[in-house]
Amino acid sequence: MKHLTLLSPAKNLAVGRAAIQAGADAIYIGAPRFGARQAAGNSMNDIAALVTEAHQYGVQVLVTINTLLTDEEKNEAVAMMHELHHIGVDAIIIQDLSLLTYDLPPIRLHASTQCDNRTPEQVIRLRDMGFKRVVLARELSIDEIRAIHEAVGDTVELEAFVHGALCVSYSGRCYMSEVLMNRSANRGCCAQMCRQRYDLLDSSMHEVMDDNGQPIHQRYLLSLQDLDRSAYLQELIDAGVTTFKIEGRLKDADYVTNITAFYRQRIDAIIGATSCISYGFTPDPAKTFHRGATDYFLHGRTRPMANWDTPKSTGERITDINQLHPGDGICVGDQGCYVNAIRDNRIIANKPISMDATHPLYRNYDIMFQRSLHTERRIPVDITFEEVPEGFRLTIGEHTATFEAPHEPATNPERAMQTIRTQLTKLGDTIYAPRQVNIHTQPYFIPISQLNQWRRSVLDRHQRR
Image (cartoon, rainbow, N blue to C red):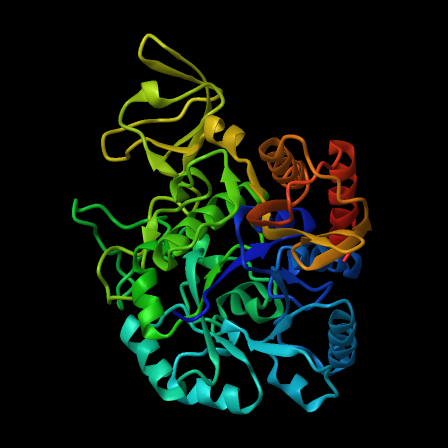
């Protein structure tokens, strides 16, 4: 199977670190300027710190400079790209193709979904322009994705969104915010007009009625549910996708931890991999920001894509209020409150909300789940210990050191060999976990303190790389 990449969003350095710990193979984060999320820019120092930490775990860092640029901004953007290359960023995601006419650094370029990548012809064009990866439009069906892959083969990587917020318009072709609010989505400052209330009128400007004979008035008619393609990862792989992208460069660390962990486990199950990650929780997309789920057009219009009741997080449906805890957030339609207590089979809330049979009760903040959100990622390393004429050689991962010491036969050979193994695999609170341990020595007596010193010496070199 081809190498698969789980790509997670990072609003900032802290969220990027959370994504690493939860199991991301790569992270995308906004540059100081010119990212498609104007409120999610990051300093070069923070990006450099993220690169250093991510690369320790073999995680790539991609940076977004994916807005359309004015002529006055392009030189600054190019200078920024050179600096990003200098600090070790793995790729830059761009939308403005005019940047290709400038003196760019020798760094991988990925074509943003804002380039409206919906056809084989467009993807071929971008490949021929030098892009190494194309981020596909969210609106594509599985057959359309397959057709693109058949056209380009493995000459360019295909990245597809699998989770997160959806835009009601074609990727990179939404001008609603610009027309109504003078805030361009292609300049990173979308006003999210699709999350507002609207009336539905026919071509004669008459009110349209719902199934109950009521006018469709002040409803969230354009607010799509969130993308969730977790059930179709194998189909996407078979269609040619190699990178699975989670949307959310404005989301917090709790969301990114939960969703990254969820997809990490799904992908590992497909490829038969075991990650050195410990989770203090069971990942569940409904437990953090969640507007309901749709696979969008992956298999045609298979189910409702919009939620007319609310553009906010709904979370999980609650059928028994005894499932709730003080501190939970609940909602009915677009009304929300916090639970103070459950008393006499009644919810005592911090403010009143109206409840009726037509609008189910949802929990959109689970305080117990939030408290459990902890992950710890280790890097698996092989350990080899062998005797050499002048003493012993210890190798941990990529780093080796030789230590002078006498070859003193042990009086208890079995205990001596066990002591060597036990002490050399005590990686403690480092970022490493022992994978395969190879001991190629006779059973010699080596003081525990000496073994510990050797292990620490090699690990220090490992962590300073």
